[in-house]
Length: 276
Image 1 (cartoon, helix red, strand yellow):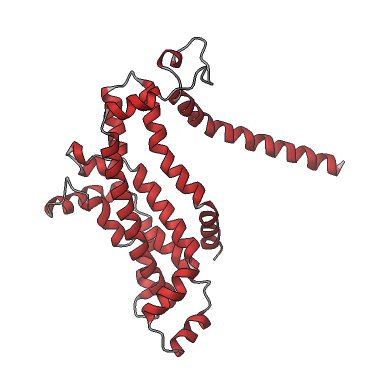
Image 2 (image 1 turned 90 degrees about the vertical axis):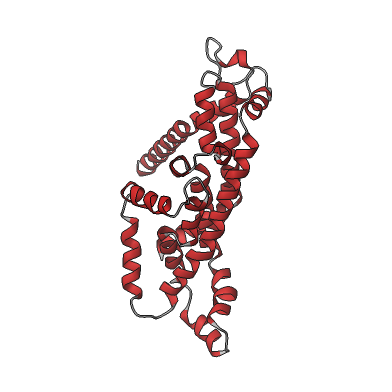
């Protein structure tokens, strides 16, 4: 009787899981299949999920109807610089908070945690006024520079990961005459690779899909990112769902590929940071 009940619970759990996955995956499947449909089949009656004929017509229309490759280059530039800034600044701060003793360390860490509790909408206007006063609006500086100053979430996550690094390992390197920079570069960073890759994936996806900040700071259409470009594309070609879905597929693809490629490090970094 107990085994039967356990079996029923197992089936119920799997059924709920499959249902939830289907709910979240269905919009993506609709987007993907619509992008490969001929224009005449998109609004066929009755609606068909699977294309009768597979075609790249919508992708050609999407690329030709708005400057896709220019927006792609802009987005890659901003995302790449943001990832580089995150990997340069956040691990340094995290290492100092986890393994170095200095006055005010705990107070600074609490302050960093406190900044994570503030919604971005609270600081939106003051930060904009700061960049506007510096004459940096309509440039990529407000979108890139903050990553080089450290991100509280990544500092916290990497610090939690580094707390598990044995202090004896670092002390042994110091006794052997290694400088703090060498210890950080040759010992700490290789050990923290899962946390670093996790931070890089998060930062890339956040920057790649960011809509609000480019909308606020960029006025020149030549500097638009893909998210802003898709919005303007929808405004100009709102009835052309085929090209719009194709553009959305091209927009989504890099983030999906990067997540799949870094998945094992991504899951390991999240789990390690959460446990420690």
